[in-house]
Length: 161
Image (cartoon, rainbow, N blue to C red; front, side, top):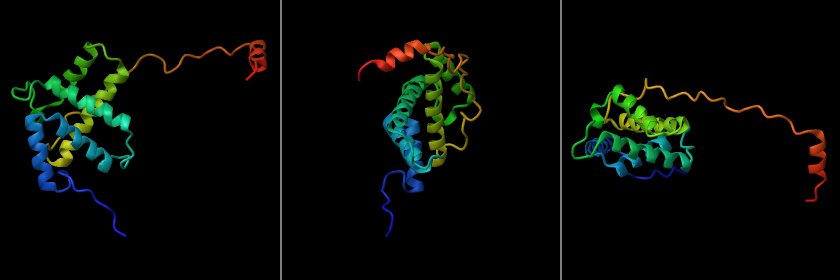
């Protein structure tokens, strides 16, 4: 039995490169999100085991990043010419907007997925996100909680249902 392979614009390497270049040039959020989704499902380290929540978060990250780069007709930063400094500025802009550290990390990971997908498609040769470090959350992962007193536990266990 043969495996079913779905045909898409990303199947053929030549059309994949052409479509990725066009989408990067026009900053087409829908096509770039489709590229990221396709890449994550077929080529990611997790071998396609990507949750729908992750895909939605990364789609938001791609759209947010494209908003940061500027309008498609006159972008401040062209996707094919972006460097590490622009990615760092994007991360700083997210923090300036008041996003929590965890959200900033998720957005950065979404942008990383975009540039990995563009490199896989042949639209970029490098990954400007590679050396950009996500912000570190300095708050403790959890605060130790005191145990409930034994008498309270007995009362709770004695409650019906």
